[in-house]
Image (cartoon, rainbow, N blue to C red; front, top):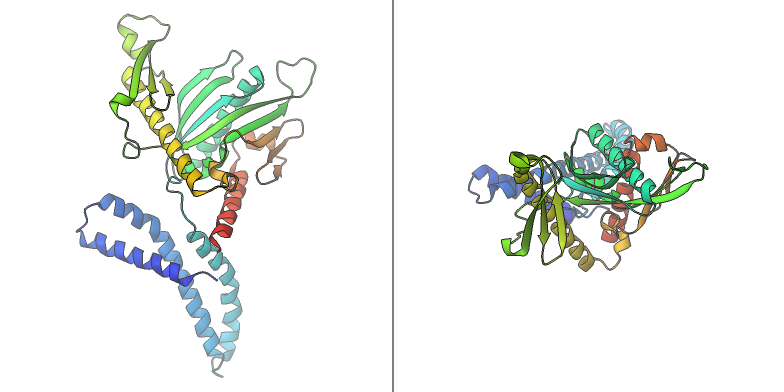
Length: 350
């Protein structure tokens, strides 16, 4: 059964927010509007669920009326058939929400073990996420990219914006392993290499306050013509966060823009550290938290000779590797989301 008292709490909170916003006498209208917007589909779902229960109760009462019995016997099976799906939706609505789910995200991709082949695979992952973002209508802005000699990448940082970006991408954090014959291998032997992916929810200035005394900003001139173009084409910015030791570099064309980008990436990394700290305090068992697990954990294998992708966290194997590398990630992400929700439902006793 779905706990009716918790449904009532949500309904009462939604009605309170609706009344407050209608009155116009609120100080923090942005915050209340956001909460109201988040609760509205849940409140509407609760209303539909309660109406379904009322319809079932009414039809059952009609069974005692000889004139209405036939109609009730016709309606009841249909109404009761809708109940399990409605109850499942209500249980999911009661799960604790990750406040970061609706945020944009930063994706950081780096080669792991495997030398040149690892750098090439890191580049393949970057393109995979680019295609996934395009398919969902998200913006995909490469903030920093260092190319390797053979056309792979030594590091890439990407800013992704759109609807529920972090909710969809957060399960991608971890070590991605590839098994294939490298282009550099003349003997046709299969090599194993890896790349690491970190997906961080974008931080806002209100989330993380960084005192000016905590950072050191260095301007680095890249190779180029110099002269009057130094500040527009040849200047990179490196920001060091002294307390944590985090170093962020941005090397776009505009030095001013580089400073903005580097501060945004720094805020996001510090926000992620704070989230991990809270997760550690809340749960002794980090493995139960798919979305914020250990990023040194091997989460997935891409086996090219077999055309197979295996996600080791949920024992999912799909023989559609070509499509996956083209950005077809929804089936995998949906399965990871469902598994995570099942764990939360068990933990909440729902």
